[in-house]
Length: 254
Length: 303
Image (cartoon, rainbow over all chains, first blue to last red; front, side, top):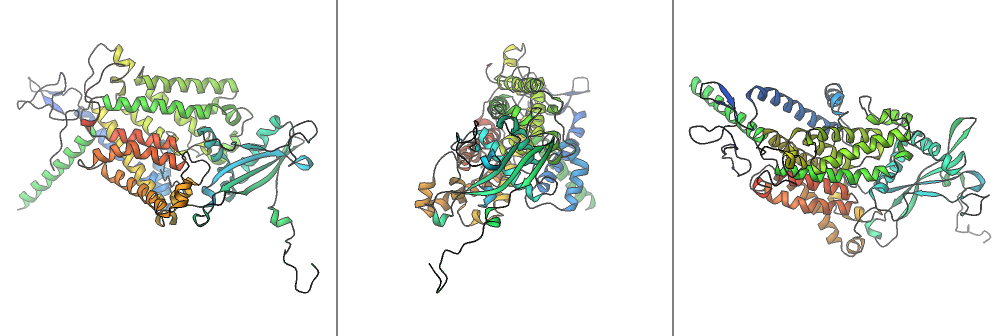
C-alpha cells in the first residue's frame, strides 16, 4: 500500500541539514557518505539503535497487551496473570503503566452509583442535629458535600466506593473504614465514630421521574480504646429491627 | 521456484520492516508533540489541584491512606517517592516540586529534564493513593511517559526561544506520536470491550445511568426521561464513536475525521459520564492522532 506522504512527516523530504540521496530524497537511516562510510541522516534513528529500539518496542507492545488483558473487571487467566506478573509488572507497575483501561463508565449497577462518606459521632450523640450535643457538632460530616462536582469530590467518591467494594476482599475488608475513622478522630474531637458509606442510586429508567435513593453500602463503628483501634460492624437496620406487617391480620384487631 | 518464493518472502519481510520503521521511526517535527506537552502539563496542573486540597488529610502522618492501607492496596512492586515523605512539610515540599515540574512541562522549560521527572512524580503520586485514582490520572500517566520519548521542547516552548539552533525533525518525535496514537486506540478499544459486557450498553439505557448520577456535569435527565429514543441514541453513539475512534486512527482516510471528532466527542462523553478530565485527556490523545497536515506543520514559533 502506498504511503501517504505529508509535509510534516515525510521520509522522502529532506530535513533541514540532512544529506541528500542522488534522487533528492531524504534518508531516514544510515546514509553512505562521500567516503563510503555510513552517515546517519539528520533526525533519523541511527542504524545501531534500530535493532534495540525495535526489540524494546516489541517488548513494550507485549506488555501493553498483557496489561490490558490482565486488568479487566472479568478477571484474567492464570497464564496471562503469571506472565504479566513475572516479566512485566516489575517494571510497568512502578511507571503506572500496568493499566487495563477498562473504562466501563457504568454498568447500571449499585456499585456504579455515586458514593458518599458520612462520619458522625457514635453512641447516644449519633444522628442528632448539629447543636444538640454537648458542646460540639454531632451532625454527620458528608464527603463530598452534596452538589460538589469537582475532581476533588470525585476522589472522595472513589475513596468511599473503594471502601465499600473492599468488603468483598478478605485482605482489604475493613481496612479503609478503620483508616478513615482513625484519620478523623482528631478533627471530630472524639475517639468513637460511626462511618457510613452511602450510595446515591439513580432510579431505573422505567421510573425515571423518581428521585435518587440513598442506600447504605457499609456502616461501621470505629473507636480507639487504650490506644487500640476497634472496628465494630453495624448490621443493616433490617437485620436488627423486627419486620412489622402493616396489613392487619384477618379477624384480628386493627 | 524455490528461489522465487524465498525472494518474495524476503521482499515481504523487507516491506514489513519498512512499514514498521516508517510507522515508529519517521523523523517528525516537534510542533504537534509540543501541543500535546503543553496541554498535558496544564491538565496535570488541574488534576494536581484536586489532590492538593486534601493532601495531608489523605497522605499526612495521620492521614487516611496510611502505610497499612497501602499495604493492602498496592502491588508489591509499586514504588512512590512520597513514601519517604514522613512529615506534612516533606509531603508538601515534594508535591510542590512535582507541581513545578508540571508547570515547566506546560511551558516547555528544561523539557528534557522536566518531562521524565514530571512522569516520575505523577506515577509516584498515583502510587501513594491508588484508590483515589481516576481514569484521567491513568491516561495522563501514559501521555507523560510518551512525552519522555520525544523532543517536545523543540517547539512552542521556552527551550525553543532560548535555543540557538533551529530545531530539526527527529525520529524521537515520530516515535512519541506513534506511541500516543497506539495508546489512544488501545484505550478506546478497551473501553468498548469493557462496556459491551453490560446489558445497559446493549439495551440503550447506559446514557440514563450516566446522566442520572449526581456527579454528571450536564443534566440531561429531563431529555432522557422524556425520550427513550434519545437515551438509546446517545448510548449507542458513545459505543459507535469509541469503536470508530479505536479503528479509524489506523486508516489514512479515516484518521483525520475520527481524530477531529475525538477533539469534540471525548470531552462530551466525559461531561455526560461525570469524568470531564478523562474526556480532556482523551482529547489530547485525539490531537496526537491528527494527520500531520492538520497539525502544526513546522517546528512552530517560539513561545
